[in-house]
Image 1 (tube, helix red, strand yellow):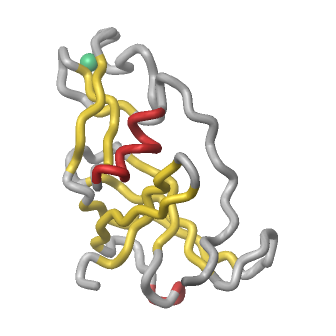
Image 2 (cartoon, protein in one colour):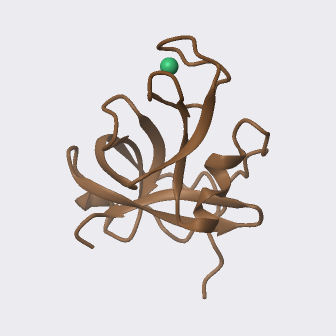
Image 3 (cartoon, helix red, strand yellow):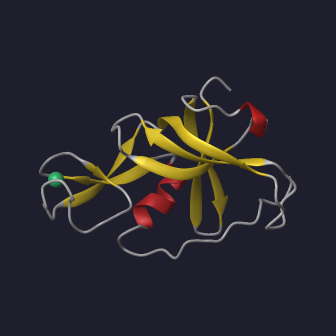
Amino acid sequence: MADPPFRVLPRLTPLNRHFWTGGEHGELRFLRCESCARYVHPPSPVCPECLGKDLAPAAVSGRATVATFTLNYQPWVPSPDHPYAIAIVEIDEQPDLRLMTNIVHCPAESVRIGMPVRVVFEHQRDVWFPLFEPADA
Ligand SMILES: [Zn+2]
């Protein structure tokens, strides 16, 4: 198996650990407000909608849509795969719940805005990076 691509590992904190380790259980997790049911990302101790302070991790389906993307052709970091697609995906459960990620398991040139995608996880040390692949892959 090839080495996983170089990625800067996030520092895990009590506030973000659910997000970076949910993949161990195959789950994409976001903080969700117990008061108004809104998903909050990036993680925050306070709900921006209702200012509630009772937020707990909750798993979503992992289905999303490509909201926008760019193709990177520059070898900024050691990686066997150029170009690759850097995308912002919108999670199906909530229209403004967005995540920056990579689209994988397809030619980068085939990525399109509005493309349905689903989460896959790339495990590196204590982190499971949520990446997305075409939903029909
Ligand atoms: Zn709320």
